[in-house]
Amino acid sequence: MGTFVRIVQGVWEKTPAEEWRFDENPNAEAETVLINPDDPFEGLVEMIRIRLGLGVLTPVALTYQLPDWMLLSEGARTPPITLANERDVETMLSVREYMSQPVMYVTSGPELVAKYQFLCRSPFKIGDMSFLGEGVTEEQHHQVIKDLVGGQPIVCSKTMLEMIFNEPQLLIISGLLWK
Image 1 (cartoon, rainbow, N blue to C red):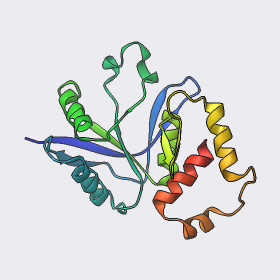
Image 2: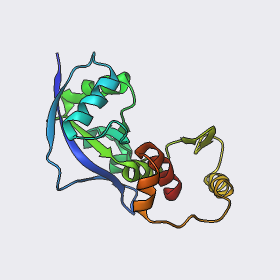
Image 3: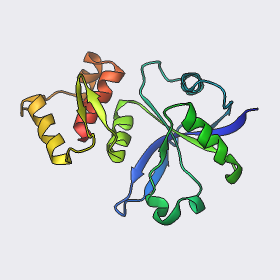
Image 4: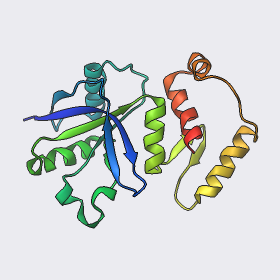
């Protein structure tokens, strides 16, 4: 048996008080999808892409937030939960009983997904190099990135970058800019 979940497009922001807030895209209509807990995660992502008209290479972050009363002592400072596999979807669907209507937040596009990952301090990879992993300080990560680009910025317009790189590559570039 499936569960109806509302899909909202936008981007997560972190306030100066370190509270998480989802800013909805005012130009996007909210959609509702039927999610079956037995469906593969890749199928869910594909369904979301089709429903929202997103390209197959467009970076996407699927997230949800627990109801306020479940956020314990941190409250709005509790980061959203990123869906990455079937178990995450199963967990989201299991807490639906405590929500008036389950909501999945969708962030798409290289810049917005990179911004979300930056705010979450999510580990990322460029080639064989990993960044923001355990045991390495943020300053050390910044230095590795500076060493990677040779200390000299490449100056060009966003339009030029979009002509040269595809969306997954732009996600990496945007991730570097946010770091």
